[in-house]
Length: 130
Image 1: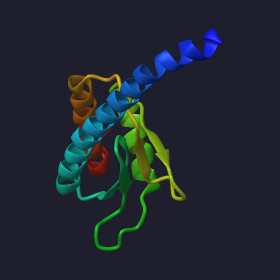
Image 2: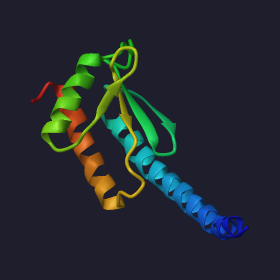
Image 3: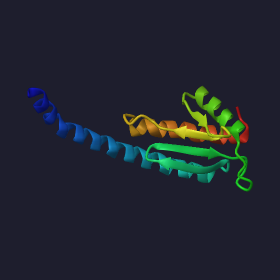
């Protein structure tokens, strides 16, 4: 029947599209992970960077010695981020994890802009600035 023929001609395109999406997800994940690791080195209240590909998270802590989860810091960070045009999601048992999963269609420049805002937010929230 013709329906099966039409579907089979689309298969190579869906396979190609899937591989392009995976490649873009890997590229975004690498870009974000590199920046988040650099931010974690600078900001003492970032306890851990974790995740896979572009779905990454920052665990916020009170200090690196006790590693006590800091949900209040995450709340301040999400509020500051919203004021600066960046939407963040705080999650986790203690509300101290910031989860990131940007759209795969974001340009690298847009990702860099968001990461710059995130870094500023974490510095200011950690210092108690508003």
